Length: 382
Ligand code: SF4
Image (cartoon, rainbow, N blue to C red; front, side):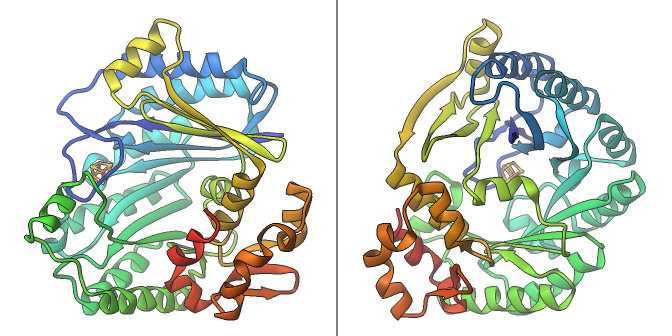
């Protein structure tokens, strides 16, 4: 029995205008206090039946910008996690990093602290687009960071890119793909830019100062990414993720397969499977309040909901449909005690008729067309 641990580091040098994560711009941050707060939360959670006696199969440091922290701090957190839960032998431990915040020494320190997979937010190699996205790093810093990560001994390296940025052309996307592949990662995430409520871009869009690219252009770029990355040895395995065979992100697979994960830190979300349903909860978002509660021995949980069997079944379907392989009908039935047909037969009929969903060899997955209209398909299962 094992589970995944997510650790949220909530600070960034500055706030990118498209970002809706729980990230706070800061020049200094209470690193030592925050580390102590994370360890205190871990200690409390380790006593809960959902996690007690289970070991960790993946850990993911996300943010924010976890690479702002010193390797010593990351090492302290990992030591505590190993002590409280224990690690599986092949544990995957990922750190998200901003290329503008690392050098060879820091990367060497992170590797020595126990990080074995690093994920850089490259986003683009076009200086104008990086500037538009509010990124603090240059294309050259991404190249240097990727090379330094390899020298530091990271065999697993992810690079994120973003497409459908206003002003971006199909040729720009093609160039970003060539650049990212040339850096020799084993995993690439390619995200379609979205305008999320609460972000600066969302406000600018509503004021008419930014116009998203037409849907057709966005679809053309997505099609290009889906065609080009596999051609370079990175088959698509999830809507936005591409990896060399066997190098898929095991941590994220936990989310897409609807398995249990514990999130610690400011604003972190968790999900614990219980029978056919489960429980979801989330923490206080503000770092100072999170630290205050955690260091006084409390849990900074500010909300929770019970996920009943029907909701859990819907979530299982739309999360697993994100994966190119979809899911096996047998696994669904084993988990929920009823067949997919019995629960979703009527609701899904039109999706099969429209060939957005495919049923093949005992599995259900999205078709190519379904991939383009994924949100529409998922809405049927929410
Ligand atoms: S660096 Fe990442 S987490 Fe921080 S503001 Fe930018 S997109 Fe958000």
